[in-house]
Amino acid sequence: MPNHVTHKILFDASRAEEVFAAVCPSGRFDFETLVPTPLHVYQGGLSSDDEQDFPINWNSWNRENWGTKWNCYSQESGIENGRAFIKFDTAWSVPYPILAAFANKFNVPFEHRYYAAVQNFWGIETWGTDQYDTKDTPVHRITKRKDNPDDVKVLCLELKGYDLDADDDDDAES
Image 1 (cartoon, rainbow, N blue to C red):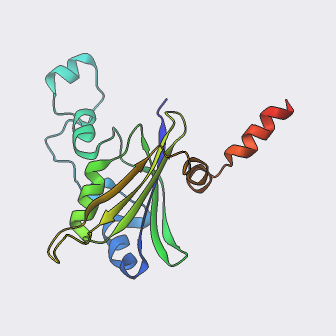
Image 2 (image 1 turned 180 degrees about the horizontal axis):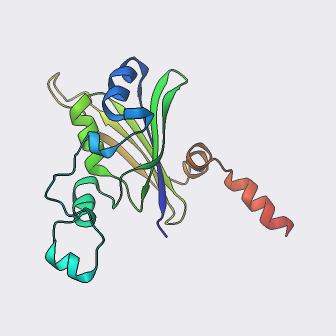
């Protein structure tokens, strides 16, 4: 069973139309729009023979190039509170190659928020430029706040839709 990591990329709504048109075909975020799978990657089932015969297979390639074993799923996109967002789930991990590709393609500052309940990790990252960068400096990660106890309840409620305090109250009544 995968650990579903929920992510939210937030950016200036004035760029929403451009970004959504490029990475959300049919309204759904798709890693293939940023980092396409080459045709030589084996896409079939993976027995031990297959893994030996096809060392460049979907599983190895996806992990190396997307940072996770599958394309994203449970996608949403839209505008809320004056900011555009792309929300999606991944298996097990943060798709850092996808975040880097997003930054490189659009050069738009963004915030990346994520929460994984099963593996119990979460974080907030700011991507942009800082005071020491020149006007030609590409967007890059400026801050990373991981597993900060002050963020866990907010991220769980925002990204997973449940209140950790409410779960504690339910346990106390049992």
